[in-house]
Structure formats: structure tokens, C-alpha cells
Length: 421
Ligand code: ADP
Ligand code: ASP
Ligand code: MG
Image (cartoon, rainbow, N blue to C red; front, side, top):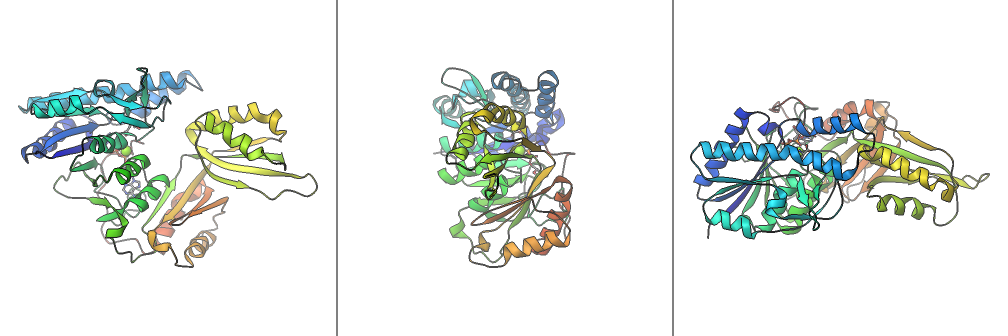
């Protein structure tokens, strides 16, 4: 039986027609290795950012349905151009959007999860010898409505396709040469990791390392899909392999450092200290499909018998969150709602920190030396995150990277101007 390889190329990799022709060559090389190839592509360059900007110019709170109608157009352009580029090299190729494939998602706009992928049509076309080019990032509901998977979601489309097709592996081609100990755009001498566990990669991705969409790592782990991150521009290099932790020996307490600059802190002030208040807030937010990250509730103040409930959300959900909280004000009988957009979450991640005391204090020490104020703290078994002022994020990342001995002598090769997401 022929092996199926799923390849995914991000925005920078298909930023112009020359780059698309190069991608076609990488795809054909895999086909010539005797494999069946399914390629997933993102929108060209900064197309999605541009589409979002146009929507925001028109409306502060555009409807999710129309956002998805708009955003899904970006990938429609790149699939057709890549299929043409492959055909121009004399190979048979066909492009499909999510509706044509049958990438079925939940009925949630702008961050839908994939439920199921139809494979019959894909297998039929592969059996006919065709290279298949699929639009990343988009899906379709049972009722035929277009959805998108959230920014950076093409990675998840690729891994989900690899899982559905029982592919040999999924290769994520991007503008850096793999997963590094931190963003190599921020720390020039970040070290490239030859391998990293699914668990650590998942934490890093959630912490803001946007080299992989968090749900792509989750999907790979769940379905045992071997996943590689590699360079679109140095295709012989194998990049970074993401694999199960049991295969690795952990000799370092911290594997990576990340910053998430796209969070907003919301504080609901003076909430009367009675049962059910947190449930009221977070149930309503969940109903409105707003994901909450860090949460802190202060001690109840003795005189007023109230406390403050602070939490963070994705910046894109800020206006929606404030609208939701305003609709709850009478129920909660709370005070003002404060919004702080100038924050960043800085995290250290490492499976090696389990049972190794002193890692959190070392992190706080570094921030103290830099005079960086910590606004919130959250931890998991293998991650410590601190919320800080946005302007302090870069120096914090650099200092933490140095403190935990992650730098190397080589300067990372980074292509493209700004990241797509
Ligand atoms: P693509 O368009 O290929 O999906 P992205 O911009 O989404 O690419 O992701 C690649 C970018 O992720 C890199 O250019 C890099 O700046 C950023 N990045 C952040 N953290 C890391 C990390 N730990 N390792 C590698 N890249 C990282
Ligand atoms: N084009 C989408 C975005 O920019 C999806 C992706 O690139 O993965 O978010
Ligand atoms: Mg990406």
C-alpha cells in the first residue's frame, strides 16, 4: 500500500507566485519518493490580517458568520494557484475547499472544532494518482455553513487530515527551521530543538509560540500522528519532531520560553461575596464561546464583603466579553468592569520541572531583577506563566531564556518579515 504524506505550507511559504512555484517543487519531490501527497495551504502572506482589518474598518463587532465567509476566501486563492503550479510542472493535481472535501465542524463561527473529515473523495483522487491541495483553516457545518478554525488553524486542518487518512506523517513547513527554545525572531540565538514532546509543545503553543496551532498538537497527540516542523526554504533539513514524552530523556528543567501578546485582562470589581457569582460569569462567557485563560479571585474584603474576579481572554474577544459582562451587571450587582489591553503572558515550559523545586522562584527572581511587575500567576505541572505589562515582555523572555541556559552560538535563520499570525 502506498504511504500518504500530508504537507502544510503557511502564509509566508506561499506569499507570492515565486514561492508557490517553489512549494510545488517540494510537493512533487515527495510525490516522486513514491508517496501519495495531500497538501494543505494557508492564505498568501498577510492576506488574513488584511481581511480582518477590512472587517474591523466596517464594524466593531462583525457577525461570526460573515467573518467566516470573508476569512475563508484567503485560502481559496492559494489552493487554486498551487494546484496550477503543480500542473505546470506536468503533474496531476486538484484543489478542494473544505466544503468539497467534507471537513465537518461544529456550528461555531471563527473558532470551530473539526468533528469529522470525509475521506472517500480524497482516497479516490489519490488512487487516480492526483496530488490533492486542500484549503486549510476552513470547515463546513452539517447545515452547509462555512466556518473557520481560529487564527493559525491551517496546522490543525493538516493534522486532522493526516489522522483521518491514517497518514505516515504530517510535515508542517514554515518560515523557520523548526521549533526553537523561544521565538527566534525575539532571541536571535535561540536553540533549535531536534525533538520535543507533545505535552511540552502543547503548553508552548498555548503560551503563545504560534509556530503550531495548539489544537494541531492536541489532535496529533490524540491520534498518534507523527508531526514535524520544518523549513519551506531548506527542505532537506528534518527540522523538529514532535513525539510522545516516554521516548525522551529529560535532562533540562525548562525546554522553552514563550510570550503571548494577544491577551486582555478583564477585572470585574466589587462582586458581592456570595455563592454562584463565578458560575454566573463563566457560564455566560462559555455560552458566548469566549475562552478564558488565567483566573484570579481576590480575598473577600471584610468591610464591603466583596471581591474582584480577574481573568484573561484572547484580545479578539475583548469587545464581546465586555458586552457579555455588561449584560450580567444587574445579576451580579458588581462594580465597574476594568479592561487592560496592555498586558502579555510570559511562560516557561518544561517537563523537567516536575519534582524539581526552585524553578518558579528562579523565574520570579529574574523578573524582580528586571523590575518587571507580575500581575497574575498561573501554573500547570510543566508550565509557569506570569502576566506582565506588554512593554516588559521582550526583555523578560530574553532574560528567562538566558537564565535557564537555552541560548546557543548559532543565529537562527528566519525568513519573511512579520509572522502571519
Ligand atoms: P506559518 O505562516 O508558516 O503558519 P507562523 O507565523 O504561524 O507561520 O509560525 C511561524 C512563526 O512562529 C515563526 O516565524 C516564529 O517567529 C514564530 N515562533 C514563535 N515561537 C516559536 C518557537 N518556539 N519556535 C519557532 N518559531 C516560533
Ligand atoms: N490564514 C489563517 C491565518 O492567518 C490560517 C493559517 O494561516 O493557519 O490565521
Ligand atoms: Mg501558523
